[in-house]
View 1 (cartoon, rainbow, N blue to C red):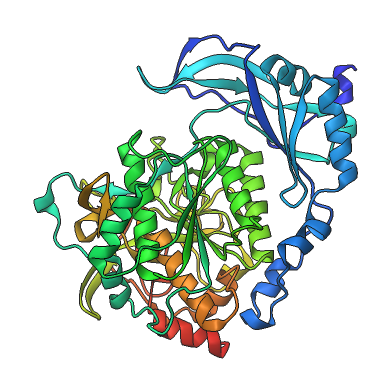
View 2 (view 1 turned 30 degrees about the vertical axis):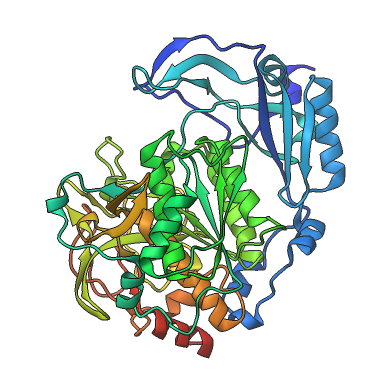
Length: 522
């Protein structure tokens, strides 16, 4: 087959990170697993329209219906697996609902099939684990054009960071709260416990100890929730291997379980790569065993650090979540309006910037019981700042058309505004958690995503129907009692003010008022 008979996989271009160092050659005889995503059988052109309806009036597909109508075509699967076999690759798993095929083989066979430009093994810092790096696009035979929409797993560099902050000096903590105390301050509905709901949590490292969870929830006077670990792409519940990631895992479980104590919690552990991240979210959304109604994501990275195919595939999966009645909450980042990028410009975090993710920003909360005494944008020197801004990669979505989202501070162009909602994230007014046998105070927008996931579990139970893709139902409530409008503070290039802003979105929740508004159709 000549080069002219091949086409590029759209958006698959990769670049080397100039700050990383080459440390060796790749072993072309090593065996790897790829995830190849295929086109859906039908377009999801009804998800956004249905999302504007009250939950009980929405069209929500079951997971079995989804596989039949919107999954991958068996004919497409046959075409791709035949191509793979021609190049010495074996299809070890086919999931029609997820539109995903897992291919196994040597790196040489992968190179023959997709023609990556392998550059060697690279490392981000001396002593850090190395990864396979490639540049340029991937290519496929022209007969697969339009069938294959994403290929992941060749370049396995770390894709995301956890969005949590721990205050090293305990005396710097002004105050701290248990998750139930934060829920009380935000008037979470007391008539619901999350019973019958399942919260999925995405983790790219670390693990949990059941004994720590039992000790923690006993201290809250709550029963320890049901927590199940699911392995994705070889990931596992591995406490003790990375204490920082252990704290992330425990924060996510303890916050969501602390506010929705009767909800089941399922933790999907995957490697920290674009393949692992995307596959974990896809498996959670399409899980027919545990059937989550809400997915919490506390990991992310600048949207510009992702390949176009990675952003597209993740947003496609989040759109699928909406069609299945699943809400996905995502932390907006802890590094202000630059999102820790050092090019002097403003960036937003992904997947929080995906239009079908509920982006979660951070505030500094001071409250006594159910009384909030002050709440401002989280921006504390030395302890982090909420992410937020205007996307360069996603257009202004229809649900934000009346929110007065400003243009991007650098480009002057409109785009998807981040975040959508917010809640307490400042580690100096942080959450009391337990991890690796130690009690500590933790903040970051990593706490906000599971807090909102827990609230949505309560709202789902109260309404008797899933909220699903939430923004078309939440944005009409701008300026109502359902949200505390945060009007003071900034995250760098964006400032808070009346209405939506690129620091705290619609604001922090009044859970009871939000519950009433959603059930009344308001």
